Image (cartoon, rainbow, N blue to C red; front, side, top):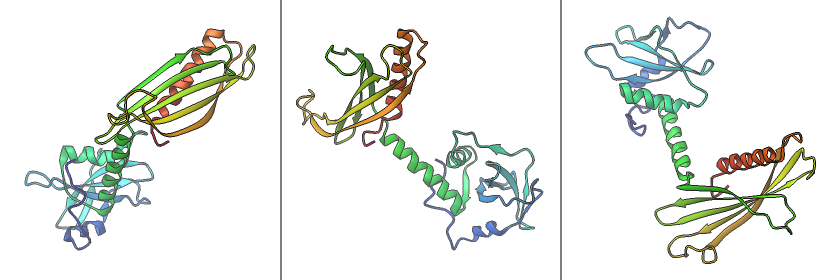
Length: 243
């Protein structure tokens, strides 16, 4: 990141006067975009300010007119946020290209929030994942079974989530749906705990369920494929060992 959000503008900074400057030539005068900060002023070009319009979910640039103490909207500078973007990610991208000279409290808050989300995501990302179909014994009460696992390797602990999916069809001969019972075991599989299941320390064990919609007209093999894919998707979406 090109700007440390812990530094820069503060409540006593003269640069915060920019917060109060008017914005001229904005196409929607009924809107009040939020001032974010000033980017990379130099002798060759005017300083550039960045604004955020929450009604259209866009950021746009404006020239900084120091003498008249105002901002003038720069034509064709709008950037719409993609559905997968956060404002913090966009500000980080802008900062990487142009560098921030100063940031408002709002701008710093967005960057800090994005950093925190990235840290949480990284902390919950597994180092490896498995998923496979398992054999079902004749005495079992369910119709299909899958198993999966996640491995999380930290600096002082190695955790493994062992997961079993037990699938029961609502009607074995003409199924329209199925219930998946998910059994999770959170294991400490670090060197001190041993690597075999019998040696690993079981930290937690819990059970959840979800439903799978089916089309009874599908061939048996296609039904099985649909169920397997639904379980794979659920497995991938629930990777957090503390979930």
